[in-house]
Image (cartoon, rainbow, N blue to C red; front, side, top):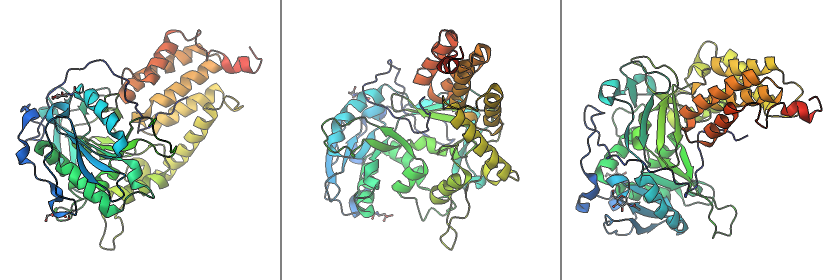
Length: 444
Ligand SMILES: *[C@@H]1O[C@H](CO)[C@@H](O)[C@H](O)[C@H]1NC(C)=O
Ligand SMILES: *[C@@H]1O[C@H](CO)[C@@H](O)[C@H](O)[C@H]1NC(C)=O
């Protein structure tokens, strides 16, 4: 069984059907009043490069057409800055990556060109509002002004920055070197995109704006990730192609380990957000930037490290603040999460002798009660399969249908899990899983 994870892996070449390319939207005040302002052909003279004052060598302005190798590289020359200012209708993409990834970036433009960059919700101006939120350390959030129901698609944005993950690992360039490259890259984004990017620089708890977040901090606070696929011509098996990606407009989604919004990156590298549970007017939209099944300790560590302000002593002022982390019942929640994970382990194991119908129902109940609305697909899938393994085709059908519904919210109509669960739901008794464990054990 494939595990659904927040960071999904995509391989270029899986071309999705042609989608209508929408104009990029520039955010004015009020925040959601978008308009297509023909961004593709702005004058490149307008570009100011942030690294003018850094140690980067003198650079030339990038051309508007296609990918441009800036020749700005790390001192070990393993990572360089590449830019493409015309991609996604002039929204632009920049990358800090290995030069041998350029070929993949070339294909990327075509894929990303076919994506949209817009709110998918009707009438976003009167439904959502950007607002500074004291409960999220003064960061800007996206607040519903009307009630929103589960399944409502919210937005689709293409990434504007790719940063090779290996660069941040041991043996990579020094932090100062990385900063120079990342700043140079972002400096090459077309001005409207750069302005959207720069909104993310506000540091939690810092209203003065005097101490902006670094790009690296921004990437780690919103750790979206994609894989550009295997590097066939690379001999070193440890060289991978995973990149942090940044979607500036999506960073208004604040972090909550029991969030109300489900997100996934589709085959066009586009981040899609859908309402995962009813959102009341006045409520901020939230996602979990980490696996919500992680323990409280790990959830706390992420918030402390990447999302909380620092106090005068330099220590984070708070940890995870979702209901399951800091509510009065937090210990109860943690016990239930532990139980839930144990049950999940049993359900994933064909040899488990503990699985019975009561256990499966208990597992689903725990998931639903723990507020994991943005991550129902896999639990429902597990429930469907296990009911079928033990011959209860009625309940298997019920959960296969639920897995399809949840899968659409969490991974899109065409995701593998949705396709697989559809096939199962359409022919429960014909599915390999029907009475599978009973047969394996000679009980059929
Ligand atoms: C470049 O200059 C700006 C404004 O003076 C400053 O905020 C920024 O930190 C400098 N960047 C680097 C990489 O030195
Ligand atoms: C992507 O779109 C831009 C215009 O927005 C166009 O100039 C460019 O040729 C397209 N690239 C590809 C590879 O289709």
